[in-house]
Image (cartoon, rainbow, N blue to C red; front, side, top):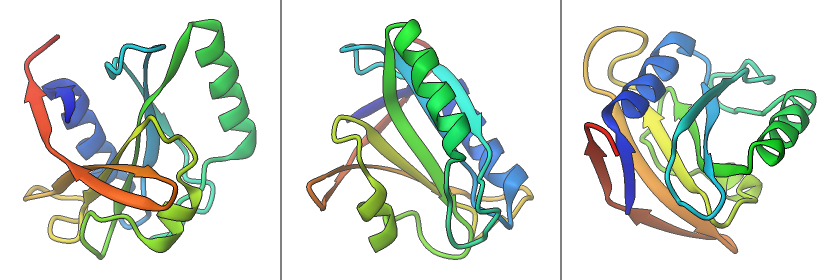
Length: 141
């Protein structure tokens, strides 16, 4: 199960809406071994695409060095789908290289960059296997 604060949930959804019609992407880091998402890190979709996301390699290297310096790890890796449901695509599964992370997908297919429902789901992806998990939204930890 992914337990996430309301603020973090809202920031992910807001980022997805703001970048629509392109896919948004980012990371929420947390203390190594805690499994607790704490630090919201929106990233630039280097692909600038409505059907694909890609972290800029320079930004990603900088992020991993920063997390290492802060004794953090990626607890949540998120991105949005702009025209389809919030479910990992074959490409998403191929690029899922953090088996301990929660992969959050937000679909802005219904709401676009405006108000309205945005689908928010979390998955574990390891060795090509997708497992959906419950999401518990809490006011704070």
